[in-house]
Length: 327
Image (cartoon, rainbow, N blue to C red; front, side, top):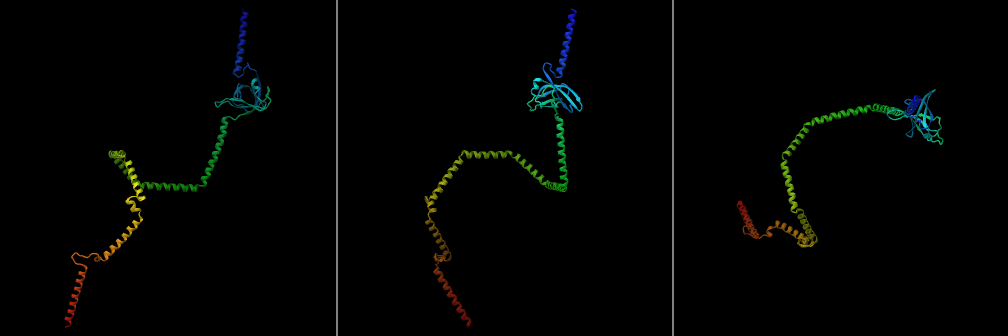
């Protein structure tokens, strides 16, 4: 019984040791249940890389870093890659050392080559360092700063070259601003008066809003009455009748059409008008030729006879007066 108990204790201890060793290897990224081979790569600097760091192929973990050691001026990295993935790595592939993510960490990514020959166990894979994001951003920031410096230098040179023109422009702007301020100051009373009138006008509108609404209501009523009275239809009927009358006149129908369209009648009326004008002119010049009576019942011949007698009497008086003066 004592021997069996010791044997059990020993077997249990060995099992614990094996499980612990397997757990340590598993934590280091090495699966003892899978067949793996070692591959090597050399770098100048492996800052951030640790034993058990991942080895990736197309985003899939195919192994882990087994050992890191210095060899003269280089750092040798031993990678443990599973056999099933080693058959996918051409001999001219590259082991790129770079950041695992933005959160930090370092890993090795296998960049596949185009060789037909696959890499062999214990072979050395060409290593290179991938520029990290921070370094790239630093380079870009440096380039951006250089560009900004160049731009600022160009702007300074442009300002120096055109300083006089810029000073004149600023002076003109100041003068323009002063002129505008003067105009605003001079027109301030007018502006205030305009605003006051506008306020008064709006106040008047507000005070007479009832009357305005009544006017709008009356206008609406008038338009409604016109619509109900068929004003548009009556106007259209009237225009139609007027158009018919004008058409009748143009065609020469009826008295008005004959008067307007008869050329002979027009010429006769025109001639009669001329004769009437001549008659009126002769009547003005010789009224006694057409009128044989006067307001006093005497004719033209009687008036002439009376005038002749008066002239004879005047002549006799003159002769008599002349004879008396000779005596």
